[in-house]
Image 1 (tube, rainbow, N blue to C red):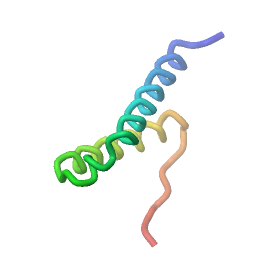
Image 2 (tube, one colour):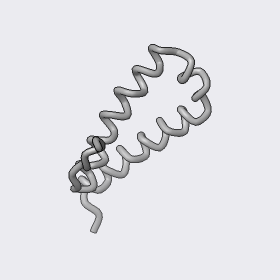
Image 3 (cartoon, rainbow, N blue to C red):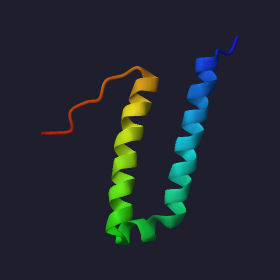
Image 4 (tube, one colour):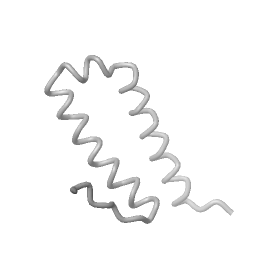
Amino acid sequence: MVKADDIDRACELVDLVRLLTRWLFHWDDIWTDAEQKQSASAQISYWLQRVLEISGTEPESMSA
């Protein structure tokens, strides 16, 4: 049986896909505008953490 949490997580992932699709079609504008780039960076940080929470994994260090 599908749980409410599963539906909520699926909805969140749909939101992420919508965001990525928006970026795909507007990346040139985002890349050339410092404010939009900063906003995208903040959104990336949020979504990275959220996807890791949903998957139940811990982030790996990105430093060498």
